[in-house]
Image 1 (cartoon, rainbow, N blue to C red):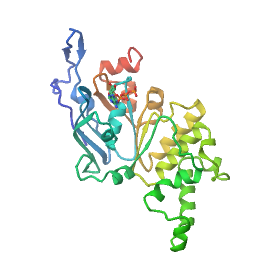
Image 2 (tube, rainbow, N blue to C red):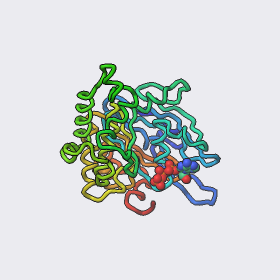
Image 3 (cartoon, rainbow, N blue to C red):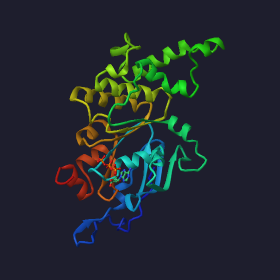
Image 4 (cartoon, protein in one colour):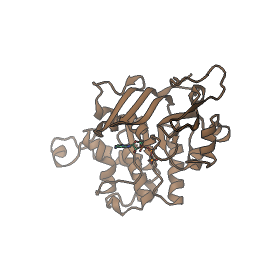
Length: 305
Ligand SMILES: Nc1ncnc2c1ncn2[C@@H]1O[C@H](COP(=O)(O)OP(=O)(O)OP(=O)(O)O)[C@@H](O)[C@H]1O
């Protein structure tokens, strides 16, 4: 499968690198559309076409077109301010919450247009879980954190009223809490204190709890924005192992500043560079061992960024 191509005017037929002039006369390598073509086996979970985002007059993402394969880990890397988080937020329409943000283009999830005015945002965000940079559990028990989404969406009925109406799902809830905590590799550490406050957990445990909370609404996709940046190396390594395991059942898209982490855990890597451009996208091994763009090579080898 060949993904859509960005619309820059470079010479794709020859694959020869071209250069354009910036306003200050500096020569900048132009993006070759072939660098963002990515052939992969299987189905695309997301198909992004001609995506542009502005914050007021600031053009944060420029003509992004790419397909994200299902049941795999896609890493988004690039220097600070290149639009990685903005791109992630486009996938579940979290940019809708930012008044200054304007989004144009198309994002399809399993073929359905995410930006269709009739898209049900509650359903969309049930299908797309999100984990943020800093762990943000609710100040409630471990159990309540995991069960929060299913209770809110009415998938689990619990409490006095549910008991009165004969709809108490206590067993289903216990099963769900265990399954999600196991899915987030946390069960062994907390199974004997499910009613303790989640804020008493370590940072790494809290982040895995947030992953368990995301799993509880049965999503297809998990978006992660630097989920390990606030964690120590041991907690980071647990999150990395977990991300690799999650990709067996979920489509994971992860923003990371840590290039070694992207190289370790992702199947494919998208490199965004200044100006909000997707400069190169492909198999992670290829991107790190044999990048086609000089700018990507310079970024990966630490010459800039
Ligand atoms: N809420 C916002 N309002 C206005 N401008 C924003 C907003 N969020 C991001 N931007 C701008 O959009 C551009 C891209 O930001 P974004 O946070 O997506 O980049 P990033 O690559 O994720 O950066 P970092 O790695 O530092 O988190 C930046 O110029 C940023 O200042």
